[in-house]
Image 1 (cartoon, each protein chain N blue to C red):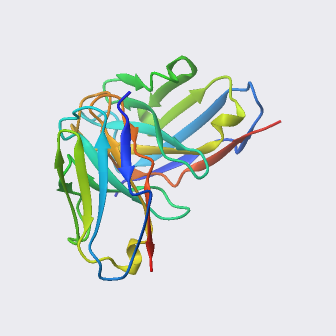
Image 2 (cartoon, each protein chain N blue to C red):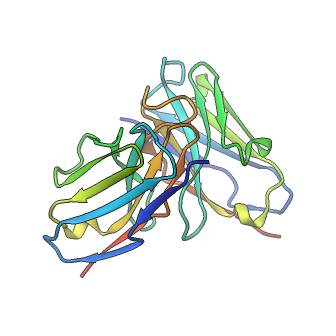
Length: 106
Length: 125
């Protein structure tokens, strides 16, 4: 199985801050990577697929990049609505998810 | 507009078989490239992919659970059914079905753009 390691596990930031979440794969995944946002008690929401393609309707403050084994999700200006847990998913073969990054608002 | 809804028992006894149904609208599982996935999430933990089924009846399973899983489709009813045998308390989780982004990734995986609300299944005697 391809292991996905996310960091940090928890992130506390102020409204307006720029925040970055990192996801590392245990082997090259050919940019088959997605990012999801999950709010408490809700289903995950797709934010990004193919490493950097923003899903329709996702605010432009979200961006993603990366290649091979290291990928990042950036929120350029954190908003109260961004309070959530964020997961990366690799799908270069059988899918696996990262452990999640909980984003808290200071 | 694509929607998916999971249904099934909320409580299952250990060793029993779980059967969950995903009823969807807004797409057809007879259309080329379309797939539906099952994913679960134990309370407070991360997501785990379980299975995919595709328009051409191709099926892919998580290797660690393959022996216990079966996924089928009924195109006329717009439904996908997941069965998991020999349930154990560690299988307690919220189970989701989701629409796979067409042609994104190889057939063993894929990103998921529309999700059901999930159904919590508790395994306990």
